[in-house]
Length: 209
Length: 145
View 1 (cartoon, rainbow over the protein chains, first blue to last red):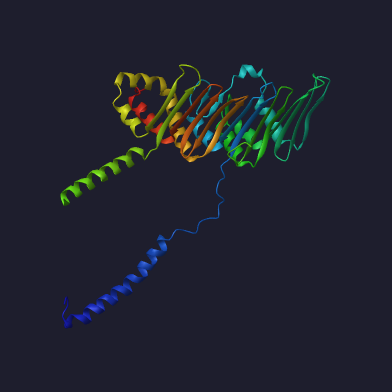
View 2: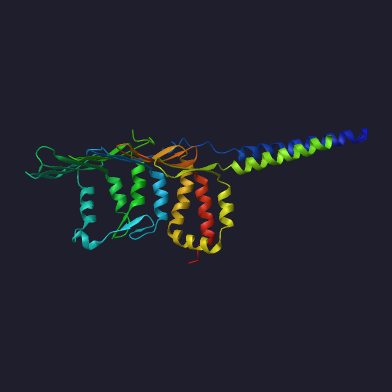
């Protein structure tokens, strides 16, 4: 026996007192330890950038490249070679022939949806338009009457904004990829030529079939 | 008799634990087959755990030279090894030209490079974590800035 009978009552009283005193504390502690209700945030879906090149030449070469955008976002800043530094590519202002790309993009961004450039000639047709937050560039080469080469580029404006969000003579590839991953499934580039087809698109699948 | 049983149990347990440790990181497979007279036929299976240990005992001078050459790519390789672990079964590159086929993909956490050409096949399989180990060893030998 640990306690004699005469100590039962004080021991029980002390235990009861302790229970009364510490019960609210322990309850409080439990409620404090409980994690707050998780916000109903949608989990980020892995986006994949797919590139497919179909060569129509004799052997029919097919090249498929699938890159997780998240992976590219992480790896690019770790590559510091030549013009690529910290995920940004330095552009040579001289090669732009004094064209102020930022001013043009700013004008497009603030402008209403519509067609900005439409050229129709014997050599090629060009169309540049903005619609629903997307920039469209369509070029058709008419020089070969039998096999017209068609180039269709569709880029979310947010991606273009992110691309030119870095310094004056830089384009921020990582920021553009980040913006791209936030976009939904998108077909970005489609080139249909007489010798090859190229397709660049983005979706949540890890295969390009 | 009881003593003998205890010794046998000890040896078996040690072997089992040793084997489990040796193979816990997976295997590196290298298969090269050239279908021509005198062609190379190489089939190499090495536990991935052996790589960092072997590098540790490699001549310092050679390791320093390798590390110096690889230094600009080490940060990217380190990130790549971590990222590859997030994509254990994925197809990254596939090139098909006639009967030639090149594939770079991951399977069960290993990066695989498969090349099949008429008369020649190369299959390389390396656990993604081994790339990280390799980078770690090279970083330790790389000259300071």
